[in-house]
Image (cartoon, rainbow, N blue to C red; front, top):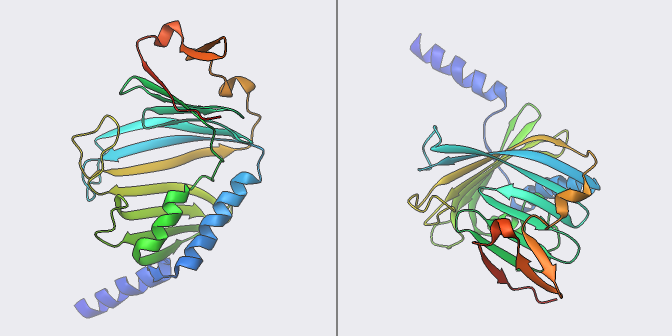
Length: 236
């Protein structure tokens, strides 16, 4: 009877479609590129983000939860990610860190897609890549080889295969801290992408006036942020 129950449970797992399947790097890249191409297909794009930070990889209850967002219009971007706000227009990129009270002015970067190139590069250091299919959701599990120094031991990416869009990203850091959580030496960061859409984005989303004023071609801190440290590494 006991053996019959075990076989029945195993059959249910098989039928549920959640058994991991090993796949190649090229297969994983194909899935990820579909996600990024879907984003580029939309001129305007906005999504709300929910961040959960865990002290240890195996923890199921987060130490804290924060909200953020990502907005794009062509090369222009505006995001809030774990306390770091980034605003970019055609000529300038502004990075505002509320934890360190610092503002950095730099050159704009080419929008590389919702899944950053550094995560694509992590595929080169995987000991194993797994795919788990659960209904319309596909989860990629990247197991990173030890000792390669890229900052992660495992990365999980959950996508909606019908919309070709990301739903969740989980990063298991190794010997790397997050801003404001320096006492967590190897945290887990979970990012949930909520209410993605292509609604019209207001021009004001990409303006710097709140933080900077420009006088005679030189950026200066606004009155509200005069106590922040300003660093200009803009080359162009």
